[in-house]
Length: 317
Picture 1: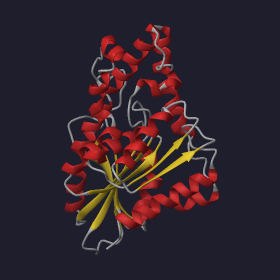
Picture 2: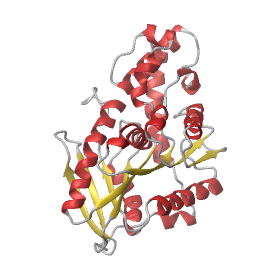
Picture 3: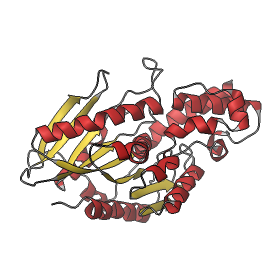
Picture 4: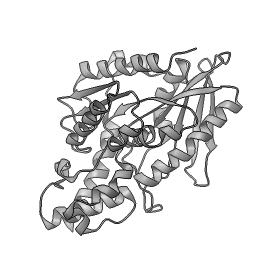
């Protein structure tokens, strides 16, 4: 049991620390971060999209409101599904708005002592419920949305991919792009050796059961872990397994030394993108962990690719 609790605790702590330490910004990174001001546009904060206390979003509206159509970029915050806030990405959202996009940061109910029922599944469902409300708010403000991008970091990247691939076909407007970094995309326990889940021991089986159950929000059985049938239930939050449902263009980044998100799982995502002929770019940070902080040149290429794909699939009209 100590091993089980250690696995869960390490996942939460490592994810939070990884999110806090990521992006030690070199000088070139300033071009992708903008301080908010009235010269950029209008910010509407804490708009409700549901009954939960956390069901709020911030909407960033560009100063130029004269165009016929606007692309929407939703950027979801990091924090290991247990911490974080939409305001953590305010400079990124301001940058997107300064480029001419309507941008939004969305809060979702975090897993905590107060909300032990919260999970990746429930959070993904909250995001699905929020998207139409974001678009409605933009339209009410006079910004007609005709396409959108889902993006995020770590936990937010996981949720962004789930929406893009799983829910995107039902979106109010076409999802034309998804991008982000270090988000878990699937849950094959043999990939999660960073937590010892790949071992055929009783402790490993129980650790897998508890960690994956907390993510799913439903209790998996030890038998399901042992016979592999747990994968059928984890499918609903395994973004890479939904790529064929809505194979949208994708830009992603992963660190080979990641001890938070299992790096081998990202290779399954890469394979799914290839198998479904997705226009994608996959960046491998060979000297970095979850923070992607040790590969400056690759990080620059990644951000240039993000901007390239935004310009390609979200052209300003």
